[in-house]
Length: 43
Image 1 (cartoon, rainbow, N blue to C red):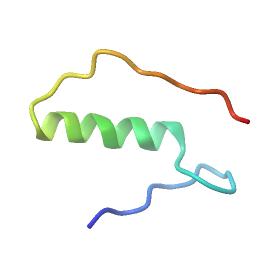
Image 2: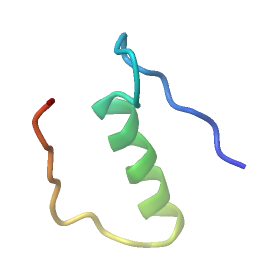
Image 3: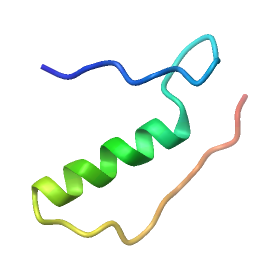
């Protein structure tokens, strides 16, 4: 079971910092290394 991250004041979706933190924790849990990050513009 996963928990919804904070929305960062936006109407929908998770804030970029919350997503980054979740991904960092997941990478550490599976002994992986994050080598790149892609951030798409808001539409």
